[in-house]
Length: 314
Image (cartoon, rainbow, N blue to C red; front, side, top):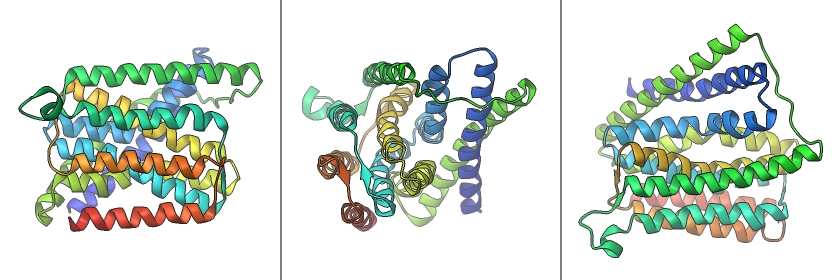
C-alpha cells in the first residue's frame, strides 16, 4: 500500500506543480504582470515545488535524512543522469555564460552547504546542524542568484527574446492555482509518510530513501524536460533546466527548510555532499570545451549507476 501511496504522492506533486504554474501564470498575466517576472518567480517556483514540499514536510517532522537526502540526491541525479541522458540523445552545446557564471553558482552552493554543516569541526559544536542562520545565508545566496537571473532576463527582453505566456479564463486560472497548491502540499506529505514507512519496512535509513527513491521521483520533471529539449536540439533548455534546478535545490529549498526547522546532519550524508561537489566539477570539465558529447554523456550515466550501487551497498 505504501508503494501505491508513494506513486500517488509523486503524481500529485508533479501535476500539482504543473497546474499551479499554469493557473498562477495566467492570473499574473491577467493582472498585467510582465512575462519576465512570471517566468522568474512562478515558473521557477513550480519547477522546484516537488522538492520544496518534500523537504519542508520532512524537516518539520524531524525526518532530516529525507530533507537533505532529497536535495543532495536530486542534484547528483540531475548532473549525472539528466545531463548524461540528454547528451546521449543529442550532444549538448554549452554557452560561455553557463561556464563562467552558472556552473560556479552550482559549485558555490555545494561548497557553502558542506562548510555550513561542519559545526563540530569548525565551531567546536556538539552537533552538525544546518541552523536558521545558515538557512538565512542560503536564502541570501538565492537572492543574489535571482538578481543575476533578472539581469539575464532583462537583456533577453531587450533583444526581443521574451517568452509569451499563454492565458486562460480567470475563474479557471484560480481553480488551477488553488488545486495545484493543494496537490503539492498533499503530495509532499504522502511522499514523506509513505517513504518513511518503506524505509522502516526494508530496514533502510531515511537518508538512503531520500537519496534514491525520493530524489529520483522529484527530479522526474527535470529529466523529462531535458530529454524533450535535447531531442529538439535545444541545448540551452536541456542544460539550463538542470543547473537552475541544482542551485534552487540548495539555496532555496534547504534555506527555507532550515529556517522553518533547523536540520541536524549525521551519518554518511557528508560523503554524499562531497560527491555532489565532485560531480559538479566533473560535469564542468566535460562542458569546458563548450560541448558535452555522447561519450561523455554515457560516462555521466555510468557514474550514476556506480553511485547508486555504492550507496545501496555501503
